[in-house]
Length: 124
Image 1 (cartoon, rainbow, N blue to C red):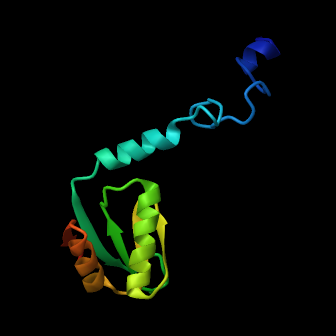
Image 2 (cartoon, helix red, strand yellow):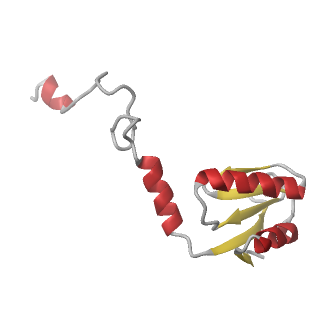
């Protein structure tokens, strides 16, 4: 039978570095998980901004989603704020996708085209 020390197999608790990232186990000051995931998200984009209207999982309420914008998360939030003001409605940024409440596909298409993005309508 293995000893308790062998069962645990490693460091259980340490206050040497303060709080640590659960993914990479580095100190939060030295963690690069957010930067790495942001770079991975940006590299996976194809340069086309897609606008779609969705109702699934929202109890029938329509939401216009804008995906594929090649901006870092801080700039993406600022762009979402200007788009929400342009549409006169609320919304959110979730996982790199801008959600605008209601059906505002045409307004968003005009606004994003004016900013120089290549925009496509997606979905039905």
